[in-house]
Image 1 (tube, rainbow, N blue to C red):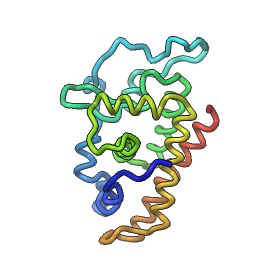
Image 2 (cartoon, rainbow, N blue to C red):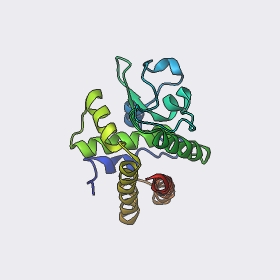
Image 3 (tube, rainbow, N blue to C red):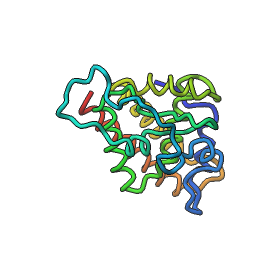
Image 4 (cartoon, rainbow, N blue to C red):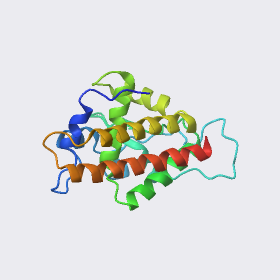
Length: 198
């Protein structure tokens, strides 16, 4: 199992504030996803892999792909996507449909994406990753449905362990438990969704 990234526990005491801001300032700056399709790099890369043969299944919309799969854009406008554009249509659709459901349930997608970025750094064993390195990690961690299932199983187990350990010093225990349980539920839904198509 992947070990927790250095300092990741620290976000628990700052990321979920009673003020209603669910993303820590430093996390929001690192993982904010600009709104609107114009914020992303336009490419001519098809969302349908070359080896994808099921023509009966229509591709996901570019708008949905940009909104839900775009994790972060660098200063040059290059975007990191998860799942990557090379993932199968089934993987992209599973991710997008589950994210839509989570969003409707009140999950903060910017914070959620920030957690995935932390996990990429964790898996790479580095705090700072270039855009190219992050894209490489996204391709590895989102290569197929099984890889996605494994990723979110690791993240689910990490959340369960945090809940067991209790709230970090200085944070509201009740607030911590409530939001940690919310993340556990979100990761469980993703594990279940990808398990069905793995």
